[in-house]
Length: 150
Image 1: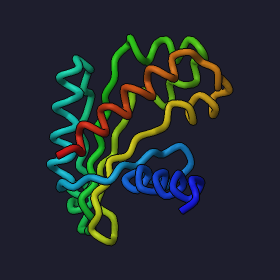
Image 2: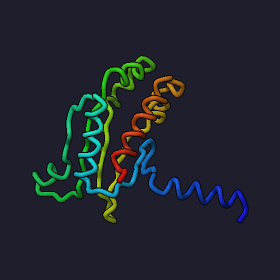
Image 3: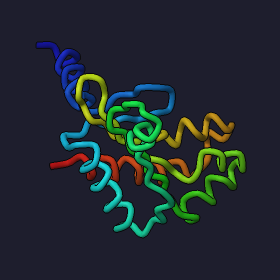
């Protein structure tokens, strides 16, 4: 097998647990239920000393109006140490803050944990070179990976 084929195969394997469902959305496969994935993510957020503003159960909301929605939960979280430097680059980033994590079950039964890519948000607000993006990206990726790890 050629080295280029081997490298390509390795890349596909490493990306098999990550998918991008929409522009700027990073989604990571979870082996756990929606509730367990969100519980794990929320615990990590609290351990990092981040503020947890809300946890929203969209399926429960849908049930209140007689609609069925697959399990879908949203966590809104963050802190001024991460958000303020990002907003110093462009105050309009405030529309996308605090940070959010969404956990949902898709039509095939796969559970996903998704979050907005800080680099995408920076580009959206015209500050692609904002220095705070790297730290936020690393933090979100780390939280997501830990939340879905066995």
